[in-house]
Length: 370
Image (cartoon, rainbow, N blue to C red):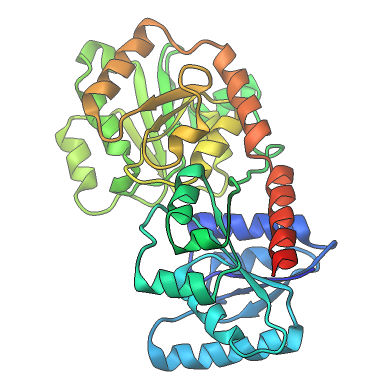
């Protein structure tokens, strides 16, 4: 199969970059894979390292004049390469793929993955569902229900969860965990519980809710916690809000990290407490590392964790519930069996072989149906 992946992000790209890279790496060799992405993107840099995967430098802008030129260039590429399928990941690249294939004698099929929980009832979505989508993927059941309840429901729609490299994100040795903990947090007593997240520092990621809850824990018991949040340095007033809570000594921001395993290795519990979330690489990676994981009930997060088995589910933004959870951890820390259950959960739901198997099966359904 000849597959073209598109990515509109000009820089980091977050989960989109990980998603496309994983699929390109899974299918290279057996299938002909091309990735269309801006030369400035992290995805462009990453896929260049994958043998046999071609990279096409383009942008997916929304202003009419540059967009028309980009659509014509994409149309020429589609005509020349005769792709079987274009897999799009955002609205701007979806729009351009739809326009570029109009009128082609052998148009490729278009599959769209919806990575967020934003509404899909707009006119633009209805047009893309009608004229530019042969199959839609939701990264969780919550998102797939949105698709099925919209214009996309008239076609093929399926849940295919994110995949992580479970060989790479695996439980660490005691010595590796102790080293990561010491390097990131200094010398800590053994009774300190480290709560770690690689989900980013934006306000909507919900980590401040955890900090606010910890600020309500009696000060003589607060010393037994540290909150470790990786990502860009917190923006706006967030650092001042942490300081005003008196929580600067308990909250550590290591910045962007090349290897998120180091953050998770230093942690006893992973957390993703977003106010809005579809699939979460941060939660999947935490579970894959064998960490019991605390998540909010936003979007698709509660689908990842079995409450009380491999983690906990709490209401998004609920400071008091988190305070009670923290106090419960002081009284009775997580059962060691939860670590094994977390790892088993990741192997069953989030492995790369499972992602690639389900995705290729969906591609074949789309092409056969069309």
